[in-house]
Length: 362
Image (tube, rainbow, N blue to C red; front, side, top):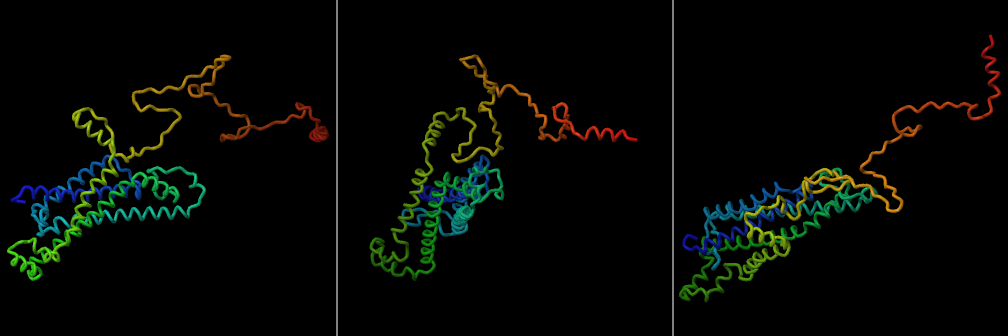
């Protein structure tokens, strides 16, 4: 890289692409895990953290690789990282984030399977007709059927992200294993020249013509078909991203940004699958306007065109509530009922007169 600018540029972009692919797959996996398993809303704060980590860690990674290892033409015309210190400053950190992504992704899948199996055994009537729970509810308050519905909804919205994470991680692991193995094979020849003795003798007999000794060198390197497959899979990652995550609104957004770079932009969160801030449900019977300056008034009474009668205004006028006499809905004792036989024309008791005489007896 010190003698060829092409080597330095191509090798740096190769390392940066590998780091960026792994980091964004890791962040996507973390986002899905937080939404599905922990019911955490990923909003603007997570977006800022993702932008900082998604670009900061790859830049730091390639800086360490260029300083402590360097780049050179390792595989023909392909410029790649040197063997010195490459495990510590590139391969091990890269595979560490890839392994964490795999663990988090499979932990999310395991939670989904657990929720699905629990929903199969949940036959309670209360959860059959219940609506989808909000993210503000606790995991312990959700029935298995409700948790399954929530997980199914999130997966239906995020299946493209899950697919691209699995594709990129599979490519990166395959890429890392192949090139680490190839690097170790080349270093084994350097430390033990007897491994490449037949190849060296062939080069001496062919006056240094390497094309005539390719059959001797085939045992010292990975075959061309495997390396071509690795490079092809890495190149297809951009195509998968375009088909799975690309939207026409992105092209419109970039066009507007280029044509009006300093134009007035709306304050909105641009994540496609992100939800608004978690707020309590404050629904009412009135339709509220999104404009904060708008004044919402009650609908006016509807007049009938036939006889001039008016429909009662249930919204603008408050009717007085008259409680029934014998209503026990409020915490008050019921009134004492008095019964007068003469007032109801009921026959008087035959014992009334004798009772009154007994009371006056001395």
